[in-house]
Length: 402
Image (tube, rainbow, N blue to C red):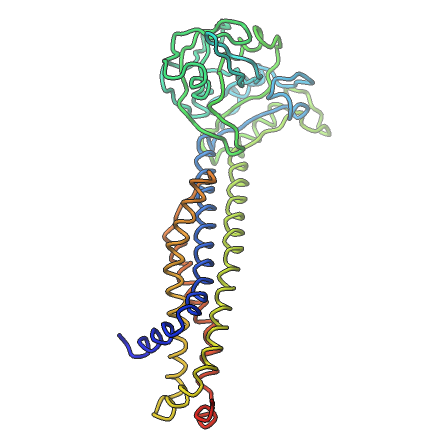
């Protein structure tokens, strides 16, 4: 072990309580940085998975006049029709799949159990647009859409609440007091980026929902997917031009519909997530800086207490740089010990927050390494002034100090 390191450890062990309290500031700072960044990273990964489940090639066309109500099944000035959806599929080259859609909330009953859920009317392309696989059974067919068949597909949450461990395929449920045959069960997707349970849903042919449950002829939304992610801008232009023509809108009139791209939505959510991660990390870094100030304070006290010792070292041949390095090493050892303990504390803290608070967390080796290196930099930065002050003491004054 190098002599200066031995001297540094001896000086630290001489005042164990004071050194422990100084190290504690670094421990809390490093631990807070690691915990906050891991929580932010975990939230970012969760959002990425949720957005991936929505589909990055997805476009959603909704009528502007009913932006907040059409997708929930309420009526109003509805400007979208099934013919609009079919025209988009037929005439827009940048579009690969299209599905009309309506949504309402109603009660689904099986035996003596009931569950209030979202009922979504869709076409057969909806599965391809959402890239939604089946856990069992099959998806809705075009023939069932054409004949307004009384068939349905259940989301995993609905299955869990009505059937438990039973297989619901080929069994009958009542939707709005109308019997429907269950032909399939969707695989679980979890919560959306907005916190909604995507599995709490029942899918019906949109024609069946239109005529047999809601008693309407319009649709509330059109789901579409582009041939590639890059083609979304061309697709939006094509859809906008086509619908303006079909709705006979004059050049000075605003669109009576809105085309929403999941990519832009995803970018906004991801940018928000990154901002929150940086904010959490910055707030936690403040406690690390406070720990650094603690190191500076303790090193200044140590310099004063050891003035005569410094004078003796100078008298026996220690150079200015030797004294400087001695105190810098002490500050670095303090911050390094605090950094190592802080890494362990941060890992444990992030796991506890994830377990008890339900927050997702993702430990990143890079963030751990950066937090540890930053703690050492803090030690060097805040230890430099006391070390420099010690190295520039006057030899005669230092020897006479009592």
